[in-house]
Structure formats: structure tokens, C-alpha cells
Image (cartoon, rainbow, N blue to C red; front, top):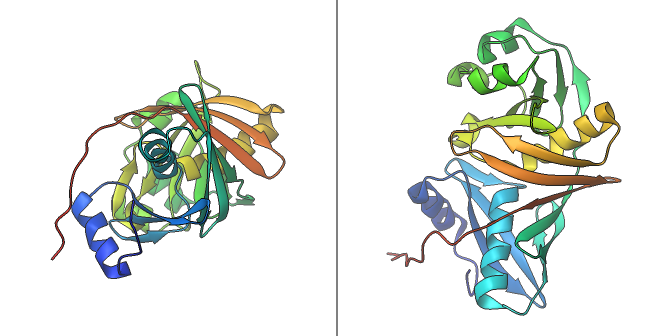
Length: 236
């Protein structure tokens, strides 16, 4: 949390030094907050888990009596509500367009997708959960595919859907839990399954469980948060 914005170049250097999928920076704006996200490779327009983490810090340590916090972002207003031990984010749903399956996609992923969709990111539907979990995409070939991120998704056995997310164009190989990715895959599975509530699983090495529901053109994504560290950054 900042008293005022740092220079963009400095925030980018901090994100590189952190070397995590995203680093969130927030500044108070009246009763709300402004929020920006930087990956090691550049600023991004939407990030779920860093938004949830920011809301958790604000509502636990800065304003502990607050139950809802709203953020002004590049993707519009995002609201996070505390619901017992969960934090629920109100995020925009991406509109997806079907695109042809290509040999280049199969070579990049290691499996041939059943179907492919394009929003901000490329969404590839695979045959089963084992393919999503065992996939070892080629980093350089993934960079040559369209879309900002690549999401591999399928129907799950114990969950409604299972997904993995890759972002080599942003200096991040695999995102441990991708909120903006589920703003792609939840609308897709909602159309396929004819349902509005989902328990989703992110099959990264760290893994993650998301509680999702779709309301018109919005995706509600809820998850838990925990304090990992408290630190100071010394700036030149």
C-alpha cells in the first residue's frame, strides 16, 4: 500500500525483484482504492489473486471493520466482499470467440485441443483432467500462440473444471492460481454445463481452489487468503 504512486519504472523493477506472477500496488482514492498490477514482464490489465490479496490486507490490517472494498483499475471497478473466511471478487467476464484448432497449438501444448476459444487469452479445452495435469507445454512455442495467456481447461472429476494457466509473454511461466483466467473459463463452462455455480481447481504445482459463480457479464470468484510475510523495501 502506497501513500502516492511510485514511478512506473520503479514499480516494474519491484515486480521483477519480487519475481512472482503479479505484484499489486494500491493507493487510497476517497472511500475506494486505485489498484495496479505488474508482472515481471510488464503491467497487466486484470489480476484476480493479487486483487484478493490486496483486499485481504486492507480489510484485516488497515480497515478491519470494513466488509467491502472497491478498486479502480484498468478493467473498471472491482469489488471484493468479505464472507466469513472467504473473499469474493466481482470481476468482468470475457467474451470468447471460437478459433480453429491448429497443428501449432498441438505442438506447443503437447496434446491436440478438442476446441479453442479466444478472449484476451487463448483457452484450449483438452480431452480430460490427466491431459491438463500432465501437459508440459513448450515455452517458446507458447509465446508464438495468439493471446496474452494460455489456459488449458477440462471438466474435472472432483471439481466442475480443472485449469492450468501459462504466461511466458509476461515473464511468468505458470501462474499458480489465475483469477483472470477463470474470467475466461467459467463463462465457457457455464454455457456448456448450463449452470451458474462452480467449484474450480487450478492444477499448478501449488494448486488452488476457487468458488465461482456467474451473474450476467460478471464472474464472482471467492477464495481464502493468509498472511505470508511482513517486509520493508529499501528504495534507492
